[in-house]
Length: 287
Image (cartoon, rainbow, N blue to C red; front, top):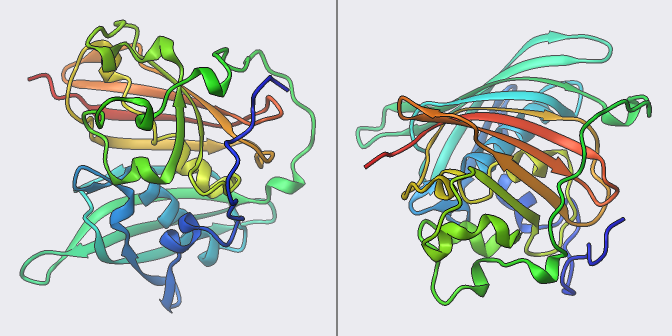
């Protein structure tokens, strides 16, 4: 355990009874068909955050499939989602004893009332609690300062460029060594590291890990780019049910080419376990 690895004292929400749970809740209309009103509270500028969307679809698949925990989920973001009504359609691809696989798509409506597909996912689900305890890894937890020596959006003199409603729902405390971009002096390293939690104190679970991998400022900021970086594809591997307490998220980019970059994320829990990994391809706005 590392020093100062506790969230700020506050009234704590619980798993199943929190803003995140309410805003990702889906209503089953028919077998495999779900309705949801996408909340404006999880937007970046005007678009709904991709990690929040992944959690929404992940919750629908957890209901539709015989297993409840996402092990791997891959999403292609086709068009930007907006706050408001949406429908999710799921299909079961295969069910087995330890894994079940399904696909899901989220649709919204254009001005003429026609359906527009926003995001499509393929996922395999299982039961994290049945996995063996054997761990053999060369991965090491990220090293950065205690939470009280890191900085969040509320610590700046003015809202950070690109911040929005989602920042009010998160507890982010960024490693100062990855905050050069906020001071006009990006490091050029393509790294972003932060303590992560939900602002209401709700502990992490497998579905909120889908949010955590896509909730930090883009690594493109530390490369020297400005403006948001829309996700094209995102794959998340959930490796373990996280222990209570704040998470540590480390994201790196090694290659920007042709107007696209990758982001590799690791999520570590309060017991120094690697609980989630992800890779996404994103479009970089170069001008």
